[in-house]
Image (cartoon, rainbow, N blue to C red; front, side, top):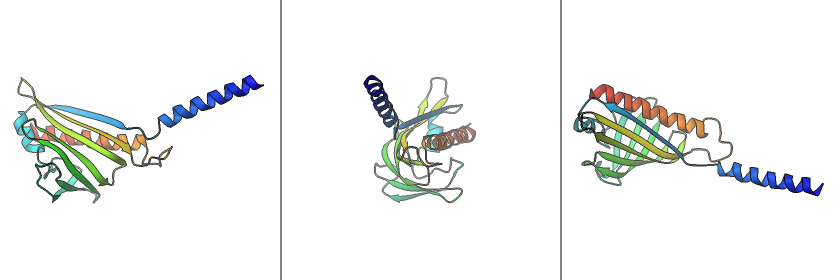
Amino acid sequence: MSKFMTAMLVSLFAFTNQASAAIDETIRVKESIEINAPADKVWATVGSFADMRWHPAIAKTEITGGNATEVGATRVLTTQDGGKINEVLTSFDADAKTMKYEITESVLPVREYGATLKVKASADGKTTVVWSANFKRKDPANPGAAGQDDAAAKAAILGIFKSGLENIKKISE
């Protein structure tokens, strides 16, 4: 009987460690799209932290602090349904056509969110836009509350990325 109990305890300990390792992990997403337009034209559309009207889900962009091309600038995005997303610019390089930002508060089911938007030229005159992010689900409990779990967080961000990238392509070509 003691061998059985030892085996059970070892199994239980191993399962507990494995289960806790999956709690509150960072989620990584990345989407890209190729656009038949020069990189300068695409960057002119998406390269302003002060203007996100290129995204169909965003009704309004308001700079609430700093200069839109300088690290530390803050903005509030208002979604089409009235939700608010507060963000801070953490890196901006117009020459490299790259900006990084973090969400500080939002209606989205995420936290500790940091993203990069990069516009890359190719030799054939086309452009690739890459949008990537690392974040955690809003609810750190295991399991996360409905709508605030890993699946909801990942689905929300992928939906935002895909609709935004598709619209950039539509208005740039």
